[in-house]
Every structure is written in C-alpha cells, then in structure tokens.
Image 1 (cartoon, rainbow, N blue to C red):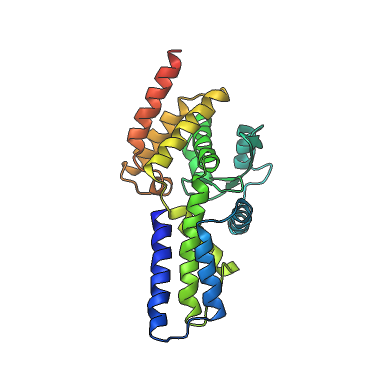
Image 2 (image 1 turned 135 degrees about the horizontal axis):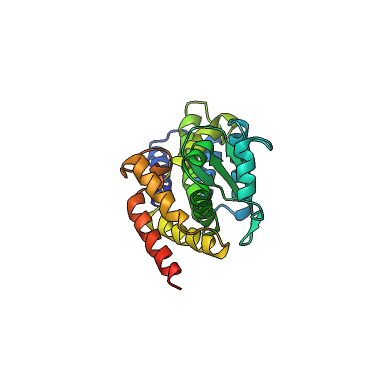
Length: 255
C-alpha cells in the first residue's frame, strides 16, 4: 500500500510541477495512464478479476504446463481434488514445468505450482503451501499486490507516453507486470495471517498439518534463511515460521 501511495504522489506532483512551466502534458496517453494510476488503488473486483485472468493467461501461454498424464500434472490433480470451490472461491490449478521453487495464487482464483517446488516437497508440505497461497487470495492480500504492480506499470506508461512509446498493459508489458507482482513482498502481517489460514485449512481438510512445519523448514534450509531464492523472496523468515507451525501442530496434537 505504501508503494502504491508513493507512486500516486510522485506522479501527480510531477504533473503539477511541469504544468506550471507550461509544458504540454495532455497527450491522450498521459491522460489514460494517469487515470489508470488513480484507479489502481480502487480497482473493482470485476476489473481485478479481469486483470488477474489476463495476466494468468499470459503466464500459461509462456510456461510449459504439465497436462493430464504428466506425473506432475497428475500428482497435483490428485492433491487438489475437491478444492475447485473452496471457502467461497472458484479455484483452478496448474503446474508449470520449470525448476523454480515457487507457487502463487492470483485474485481470479488461479493457483500455479512450479515443478521445482513439487520436487522439493512431499504431499503434505505441498498442500500446506497451496493452503497458504489460497489464504492470500481469500484474505485480499493478492488483490493489494496486484494493485501495487498495476500502479507501477501505470507510472511507467506515463514515462513511455512522453517518449511516444506509451502502452497500457499491452501484450509486451504483461510480462513485466507479472514480474513486478511476483517480486513484490507481502507484509509480515499478511504472511502471518496466510500461515494461520493455511494451517487451519490443513486441519479442516484432515490433511497432515505437520506438513507446514516441514515446508517452511525445507525453504529455510534451501536458502540459508536469508530471504533469497524464488519462493523465499516473498516468504522470508522461514525458520521462525517453521517453529510457529510446529507450535500450532503440537497444540493441535494435544486436543
């Protein structure tokens, strides 16, 4: 939210300052892009779902997908069976056959899991990550992440328009938008809330809730808990989170 606000302030201060010196700013591209920045923080659920769907479609077209009959695709399909309509969300799942240790979920309900993550984790651990990512959507974190990435893209549009190269989320910009979105870090409070959601998800579904501790411990071991690496870039502090997940599991075991 702070990043979005900073972009909004910077953009309008810049426009106002240049206008005082009589520079021509009212190009159609500038107006359209400025409107998009102003709209970024208040995107409707319908607009957000459309933007989310368009970006996921681009990702699907630009990554190899594990289809039915592929070991990765079949494994994920089995794991998420019955989760198409979960907690009021319409979800869809796919595996990208890439080595990245990563997973993400978008506001339209698309959950994408990387083959590298599946290689690293057992079923319970993988389900805990999926539950965590569903939590980001259900709790509205993914929408805020999209708003921030959208605002950054919009600010870029203004700069491009001033050099006669402006485009508003054209096909060749979606990749950059998705990179901004995937690289954006959730706040610590958002991560904690999604961890808790993911753990409760595991308990409610009758899954092995000890998997969350294992998942975070593997991520901590993989990165040295320094916050670097694919999934680690947006999920820092895994060692502490593994400890907290263990505490939750111990408490659940004691019931």
